[in-house]
Length: 352
Length: 257
Image (cartoon, rainbow over all chains, first blue to last red; front, top):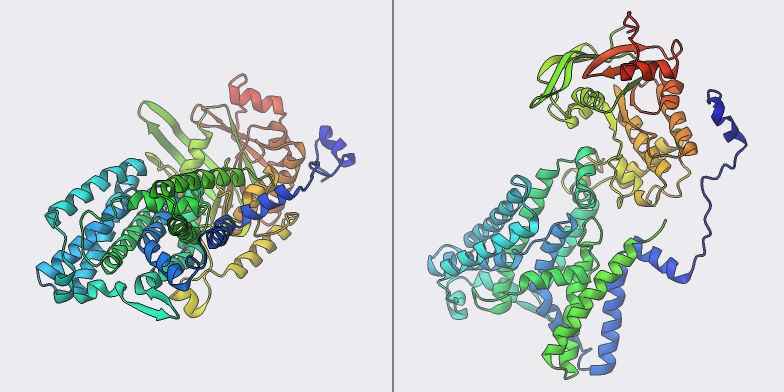
């Protein structure tokens, strides 16, 4: 402290506080702070509120174990896609091809196992490898050719969808044929009944996938790197993260999760249809956004996407049971998206 | 005394532009070497060549007398060379502890770490707290606080603490006081002296003459892509240094290195 140049000597007598602010900790400010630190609170609160509201409106029929387990079944496939989508969105990317990868891989699994007599486990492994390959294609185009994720996956969405129509001949594979040749493909359609609730293996799979990905994102170095890349790509690179390699691994993992969703979808739908889940890409983004994961990257918990998918399922089921026309369900989901993003923007403006 | 870093006749061209023109460079053990020069003189280029961010077209770079050929800053980092970038290279949404360990996280011992690759968050937080306390920076409320909730000076402190914690050879600091107010700059300058007191040499790139003259042991003046001279700040005034680096005055005949 003795080597201070003359003009700074006066600092010794100065106020040692760097800055002082008029802090009025209003209730709203405090709420904003809590939400900033816990990004999943919003979707959890919305989920609980919507359950309560529809319980009042639609009655006990809505809030029965059977109906709640049915909602879980209905959101299971979109939920798994939303898990894959979350991975990408946390890196500040977007993947418009998730549902296309899913359907393409379910068609490949079905073609191999049902039409070509390949043992079902091998068909499933080939499908999963195909999902990783499709993800690697997205990832390499984005990192090596430096294309924006939106454009890349818009292109691969069409490419994968066309391949799917070609490989399937635009024909569905019938349920009976799957049962006869490769029952394993419908594994995730099996269910356990617990007191009126029907829990399919697909629902359990969805929850397991979320737990595993949550662990990877929060408890491993890889996960921290994924967040750092989404937060500030340049800073991540400079602090020693191999950003390109990590990004490609994220897209490959998302592709694998999509392929697993493809397997689960066979059990959920019963048949393999090349035309199913055409809106799955956008529905997965909807779940992620309602789940409080920031589209700008680096923020939000993957568990939010699970709650986001459930919120959409609860709204659809509740409005249907309350006798509301389908068009108003779509209307309500639209508002949910806009409100969710508005809340995200408000939380991001938090001051220290 | 073997220099910690020595560059001999380094050349780097970008198309028709010669960013480094047969330049030399030396950093001696335990010193703070300031690098000054006009905009475009190539001071960042020479420092980038030393830390592996660019690979020179000609010339050699020796670290503690051994020739090196880095292809990325990650390789330099593995040798114990740390860089504090002007934009700090911190991830705003991640915690202080996460940021300190980015790219070199600690894993739990045993099965959890080896097969489940689980991070040892407690150990990382403990280490981060220790390092910040050593440098007198534990005024932050919590080590788990996201970096975006810190002030500019505190962020700079985290970046310097990260470098100081892991550097075994030397630290490069690019304009560490450029974005800070008077008091925060003072804190960072004290920090820089603290780091030198631990025996780690520092390359300080700065435009701020009072700061340079206060902390530097030697000043490397860069002009037109090469080292013009090195001076001892005790022998010259700030106006001399500015005159040398802008070409208004001839440099001293002897090379003070």
